[in-house]
Length: 411
Image 1 (cartoon, one colour):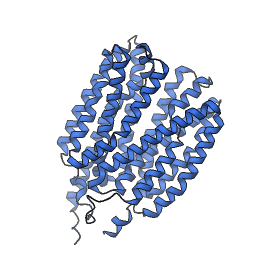
Image 2: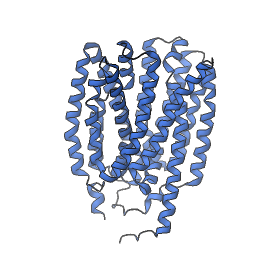
Image 3: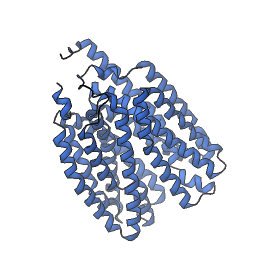
Image 4: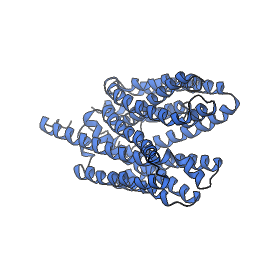
């Protein structure tokens, strides 16, 4: 027998509680991004000052990103197994202390350990945090809820690098800038405590919303999830990273050095604005909105890798738009496709595949760039052409209501 619907008063209370969680975790991510995006914006030159060469800098960055995604599989599994989502989130954000501690790193080897530790922290917290958000976003619309979180997150991504710029303008150095990051780290943990006190059991925001399929809490993840993961894996392999784009813009003297951080800030701003728009579109149109990822990815190499300032700027704007769509709709779709008891491991698997696609795509494009820039466009078009049929397979598994076959049959 279906569970009776909650009374309107109870629904309104849940919605208010859900928005509190979304807003608070968004602010947590804002201060978290001020910390690590600020640090990441000067990682290369700071490691160079400590004695690292270009090969070491590239290896540290690549290893950190890979670990930051690959470990999410284990952390997601552990979160589901223990159901200690808040604890995992606290542990992950706690490792943000690695960034201000860089002020005391006298050797690049120590700095490398701290930088990789911060990436491990992100791997620990991300699946649990997204699982908590997935429960809250059920009450306000998955797309819109994740869009709010992404928009706040991007505010931090813009402020962090600008904070370093301000310190340098005021004649401060790296040590002063890194030390200043203790403030957002402390605020991150403090607001996270507030969020946990407000909603200690976020799964209750979603538990009564639908009748679970027998055995689904411990069962396999649905076919739609695996197809969707393959779609994103292939699509993102053809999505150029900003490091390569900025390398091209500098190497070809398309954009002055001083303007490159501004280009990145513009991309992050577009990311946040597009996230809000696509979140609403996702809630109204469902999975079909995700087709924008491959469609907008295709023109990027034809614009960003030119020698024209204006075209490059347009390419960077589109790059930021695709990032906003990815960060919002990807997490919302995973939540819609997976059962409550498998949410952490689902995010872990998905994020591991996502990280692998960034690694594979980055290596391929880096190698191809040295041969011919034109071949990058061929790779991008080819990957998106492969991704589209996989997307159509996902659409057959997921209805217009956003639920996979087994979930629709349960109602």
